[in-house]
Amino acid sequence: MQIREMKEKDNQRMEQIIKRSLESFELNIPGTAYFDPQLSSLSHYYQQQQNAKYWVAVNAQDEVIGGVGIAPFGQKKEVCELQKLYISPEAQGKGLSKELMKVALDFAKEHYTCCYLETFKELQAANFLYVKFDFRQLEKPLDETEHNACDAWYIKYLS
Image 1 (cartoon, rainbow, N blue to C red):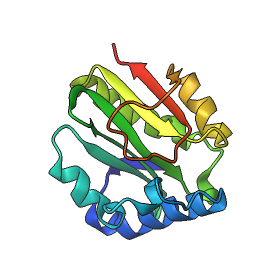
Image 2: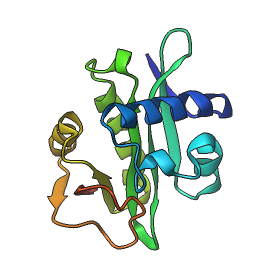
Image 3: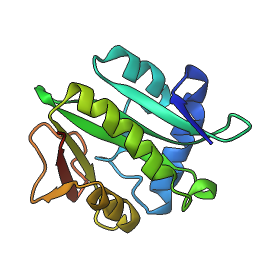
């Protein structure tokens, strides 16, 4: 397994992983990443933004099996958002999320003071991972959130 920056050729596979994952939890609803307009062109979306990147994990055959992104959050220059951490079903349970989180948070520390994320309470494995990485749960989302269907929000101070 290797983690590298996303390339244009990875867009379709990563979109498929994200959509299938959300469908499996019946979260293919408005207000989630499922309907993000940039979902089919993630590589371009992250390249366009300053201090933003998306990484993919690939197997030995260079097939994308998961990914994660960091991008600015709203108008707050000091706050980034951990975005679109998704792993294909066949690659889950092998520590891949932890490795992707490390890469993303190392990058975030270079450019931001805080890292925000939003998710769903029912995604128990994801919530457990965020707490393990010292994210603190918030009572409500930060202003300027785009995913209004989410019901769990976290922040981590990067020091």
